[in-house]
Image (cartoon, rainbow, N blue to C red; front, side, top):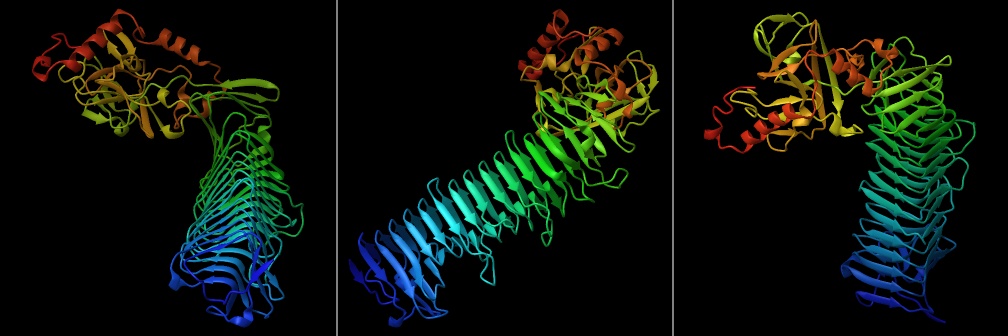
Length: 619
């Protein structure tokens, strides 16, 4: 076997290729390169970017105690490809097999072994081989790592006395990203990143120590998991910044009860602080021997369509924050689910039941400290062992069936018919924005008489998270779409709100034509409705519109009492009652509807001069 000894600090040219069967061994007796670093193949910064490909053996076999040994150093950037072996051996064993500085990139398909694996500053590391070391497998000072499906990165040491080692760790403040499809294995930590980071995993990230952490992000970041993340104390921990977790794989913290972690306990699937957002998708599993998910330090939103389990607690929110737990059909929990804020506290937590297919909570008795229960439009949920505690309220725009002491009850809601905020209503004191009306204010009826407002319902809807936003997105009728001055301004109504035309009531959704009657695409809307002593007609932007009709759906509005807990109407029955009790017939098709649609579409295409005065009979 040919063996070459290369003077440390020198490279013959800007490109080097080490063939198979060639061994290059460092010898610290021949010199050093800056700061006491010794190595086998050193490319100083003066050379600039270099290209090195190794198919042989590079061994920084130093013997001087405390010497920093380097197998290959790229100080000025460039690229290093390894299909052979690069290692740090000898008795000193301090240093990295590869130091890639100034944005240098490394591609490894071979073996990297010994003390430390790769130190990379700002470049890209791609691994499809084996990195098996006692210190950090890869230490990033900014940059990115991709561990491919055939790649394995293992760190076997617990600590160096100054820090804990990991399969992937980092120093410095540069943002980093890690993509793993293979195996990352550490002792205390598999991935330990102290700067803002994104970790994407479809492989396995595990610790070999019963008290280790799978992933620790110390300055916030994002975890996207489709594979396996497993630790002892913690499957994954995020702190110090904005924390986002999206999981469709498995995240576990398996340590049994024993002396607590210095900060947050033991056996947790996920622990997250500061601006928390966690989504557990269908098929996703988050499990902890003691607790599935724990939040702290900020308001948290958890969306679960998968499974979250804990030996004692599935989910534990922190107290003092506006927490929100959103359940999608298929969500499963084992253990207590705690909203964090006691009922009656100044800040309350929200339990939101979402989705469009049927959902079920097998034991609602395990849910505690949620002041508000929200059933989204289109949602349908069955709750067993249900009790509405003092201090709790239900806001329903969907449907739930609840079992209380063996008796089934149903809460459901019809489509909402409402005015969007900002709509002006004609009253005795002129036109007034609907949100500024008060109970007792007088509104004008078609015969010129006045009627007092009995009740005003209000509902804010987050359309970005609505399971069927088209059912709630407002419909806009352009100004003068129907006749001169009608509407007086653009009029925005909920899709099911009815207009008065030829002594019929027509839901505005039946009039959408893509021209002067269009459905909006909004992220958020606030709706209001006005109740009179009897169902009747009032004027919104000069258009006759229906007032609120009580059909058992008052619970659609967030300021309604919780009286509809005992309502027993399905959506079809809501509409039947609406038609039976309304002041005029409801029609969604037929000649009357087609006449109004014809007026709207003709005015949409007529020139402004021709449109003036047509039709002669104002709607």
